[in-house]
Length: 270
Image (cartoon, rainbow, N blue to C red; front, side, top):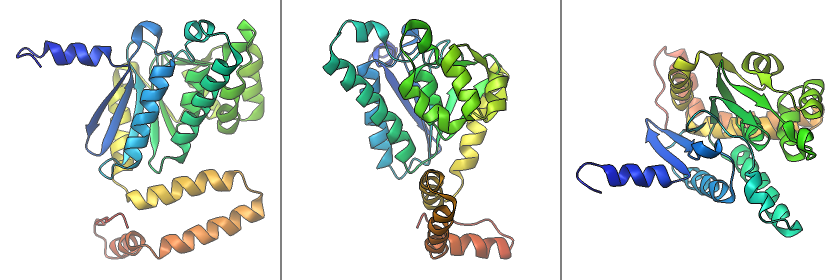
């Protein structure tokens, strides 16, 4: 790096994904602003690599995903896709994307999407795959593939699990943009804040979650997604077993004792 820091600044600008760790939070920034952070093969590979590294990093409690520039993500890089018009290439890219989205759900740490600008197609899929979503009041969401003859079938998977079926079908069939407020109404977004306060709100939420027992968060996140796919009676059986195992953990004993003794808990993540 040069004395004036220009080399490192240039290197950062050339990376398609940026990572900054602060207070147990990994901030991942999609860094293709000129392409509205379209999910190229390179960007998906970089994001998958960081998620894999974070899964092994005990210092990280929460992940935040945002986009550089004026957009969160415009979805798959269609220019890249059309430059490789073969069944094998298309299948590989959609498989890569699906594996990436699944890795976010399977990650034993909460993932928060920080959405500024548009989140469309696979970008909306990325939002729906995150555990929590905070959006600027200027953010907009869409699954517009139907407008170009390509139904958003893979974005449909997490979208239909995040919002009601009628709301999901309307987005998928019309391709229309949904405002941040409407996204909040249908359950795609947790919080909507003024653009100037987005980073502050995301940071506050991430720090609050990061202050919990990492073990408890991991147990809870896995249980949430698993029980959601089970019939009601099976879900209760599974959740009861999870709570039993959770109660035997050191952090549960400490948390309950701290509550009864009216003191802050001291987590050991075990």
